Image (cartoon, rainbow, N blue to C red; front, side, top):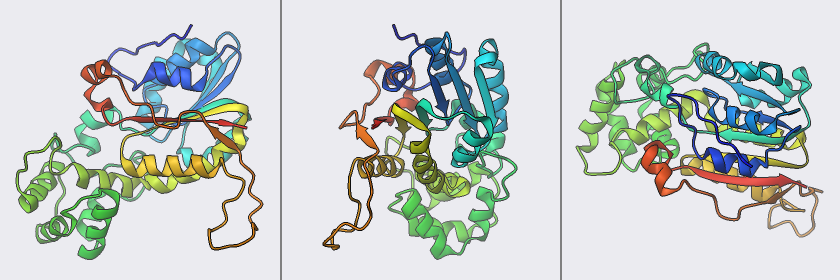
Amino acid sequence: MTHAVAIKGHVPVMVKEVIEALDVRPGKRYIDCTLGSGGHSLSILSNCLPGGELLGIDADPEAIALAQHNLYDYFESTIIINDNFYNLDQICRETGFSPVDGILFDLGLSSRQLESADRGFSFQRSGPLDMRFNPEEPLTAADIVNRMPESKLAKLLLIYGEEPHAYRIARNIVQNRPITDTAELAAVVVGAVGERFSRIHPATKTFQALRIAVNRELEHLTTALEQSISHLASGGRLVVISYHSLEDRIVKTFMLRETKACICPANIPQCTCHHQPTLIIINKHPLTPTESEIERNLRSRSAKLRIAQKI
């Protein structure tokens, strides 16, 4: 029987579905590439014991400290690493934690990150324009907002935020420099596009674009997905929860590519890539949260869960 375990004050997304998607069983080994506060990992550990093990990875040192506390009862079965998941190969090599029976990526921001004003992820609270997962990284959102040329800034908002008013917003940002505060930036965005009646705040896509750029999220996701295959045992599961179309497109494209025997361009008459399929897709269409989960945790509403299994 699958057991979902809760951490007080923390609500992991689609936890029951994650445990079933990973096919968590006693004695098996799993990697949580986005450890956060340890919500998913706690349920994985409670279902893979006795004999199971978990490797948890997170770039955010605050998350690491929380996870170490929340998973303390399982410390003998857990390795926790403060690093970015794009270093998955190196982490697995240094810990000897490979091959494994399941790898999880939950790509969403945690409530803790969003609610911490000094991290700068949210326009709901006034705070510094930071947005770094790892505070030791050099680039901040303030650097981009105040230094990037208008044309490049507009392109960033258009591509990473899928913001239809990207050029208008970029122009207003440049005209109001310097901007150092999240609430100030949100006001500048509203000033560019006006108060619009929508399900989401007018600054949502701008903040998404800046966060993705600061943390190189799409590039790192692509790298980590490519590395993950070699660390899955035969029959092991790859499970990814994404929250916006850019992430989901990368995950979907990667999984589909890895089901194919040839990935040569269509204009090449004869296969030269010698690519071998490594995955089979478990769910043709992504799983989404139930209505009751969305009622309990509104931030889960955009989640999409995809599952693939190593051949």
